[in-house]
Length: 465
Image: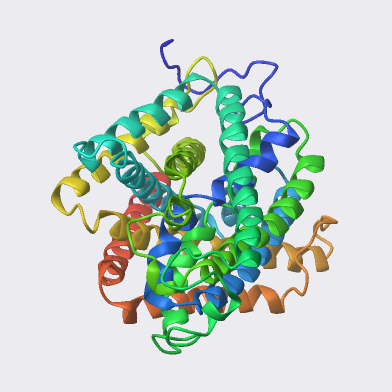
């Protein structure tokens, strides 16, 4: 590896932020789709089905609508001015300097915890083939892999992410097609035949009560997280004004079909009580087809999905953290760029913190995944809320004639804006009633607020001095 250099001279093929414009339209679309299809669906859906029942469908539908609003708001901001700093830059520009600081660090917390969750999932997946391999060891190996990919080149990252995402998308399409065939044939995979009746039998549509779909919202929000990667990738897109609207529209409808369609198919193929936490529901379904190798193939797919999301997480946090470092809002080390124009300092710093996940899997192996996802949800909620508020500020400035509003806009604004912000606030409140690992995240809120407050005060004093 070539020695890192400080950000400074900008080669002709790079932009003003020092990044090379090497990501094409197909890569941008797959980064958005693939980033969002990860462990939240492939692993988390099984446990949530068991805990919530068929009513989990409502949680996915509502969060899908909210995710659509966030994507359209982000697209409007990106088309205003593409930036690798993405929503951190937009929060700073339209809300205030403090908002950029808070958004950047909370997004970093989000993805650092996502990487912990994804690498933890990989450790569980590997145990299917290597029962004696500790989860923490599998997590460590996967972390080393995604670090290596992100340190080589953006083009390699984009190409790998394209193929990783393609595998995930094809796997879900195959699952939906095969699942439809099994449903029509009334296949007997679980304790009851595949049938639409599984939605209302076995305790009804709300077997654990009407409150459970609400309490599951924070986990479902985590599942949808990463759609905002389109905004980060825009900073290194060759033609962002063409690729971003296409990517946003593509991501919105495909994610809706894949997420809601997959959960619906899982719910009708087997009774909700046949699924369990810690085991991929997709692997569960395919393993019961009577073909021993099919379960292994699906396990490889979900492992690839987890690697893909972890890969995307390291990519995005590297860009966001470097944007903070350039403004003196993160350690100087995070601003280092390699000669390949990769934010090497920020990437290494993120991976260093991700080692926390390895330790977590040693100390509390049964709860590591849930703890990571709940903490990550706090970062997702903060980031999405800042995107919506920034878009509303942009809309107001456009109405005053201060700037031109992009053609790709959030429909129904400002009503959809504030409805989305209110929903995100409700998700945080509901976390306090969920119990278990959610309480760890809730107790962490005042700690995060205090840390961010102290950090911003230090940054402000340094600038004033």
